[in-house]
Length: 124
Image (cartoon, rainbow, N blue to C red; front, side):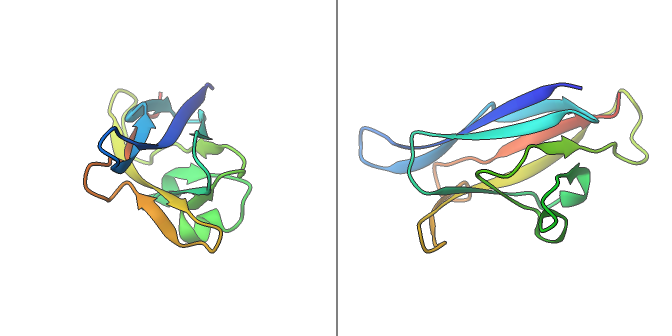
């Protein structure tokens, strides 16, 4: 079981355009690893949304209903993927957003020039 650190950074490039960076863009994880998201160099609240939320677990009871992970939530655990052979990989994407104090989206990885991230899961 390993801790996988993923950083989310909202940056403004020299041309003045805001964009989102996720590093690493693709994180490789094995079942039972933990994912630890860090927001760096930006004000606001980080929100990560996992469309395939059933592949992860956390102590936050709202996560299982919404798939939304916020700055300050405990790390996510990667679950075993049913039916996936040990050497096979299941790739799942996530969306990153920066929210203002009212909960409105300032930046999203769905915006042009930005990119969300992905988790490649192996069972063993």
